[in-house]
Figure (cartoon, helix red, strand yellow):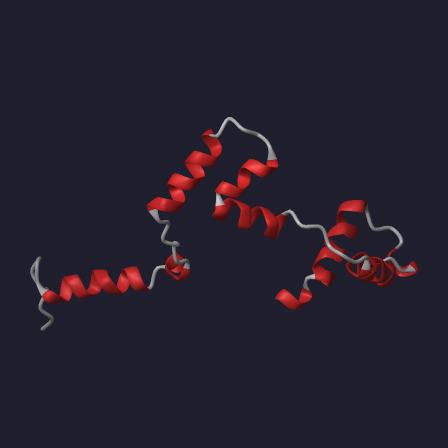
Length: 114
């Protein structure tokens, strides 16, 4: 005969631990945000100066600014996109709407990420 474990036993606690481990979103690790970074972001957002040179005192913000706001130095990526567009927009697919064409182009261009 099966016995039902009482509350507070090790079997109940281990079952709840495995249910958390089996959670679908358990793979998403939340990054640790330090207090110093939070303070830097708050100081940046509250800074009355809007000049770009004043941003050098916020080193994390400046690093992110340079990473995501730097233009590409060459036109090769754009030329690759035009080439891929020519492969997608063929006579057989000449009725593609603009949103579908854009979606096909982005999927083909980012295939290496999948």
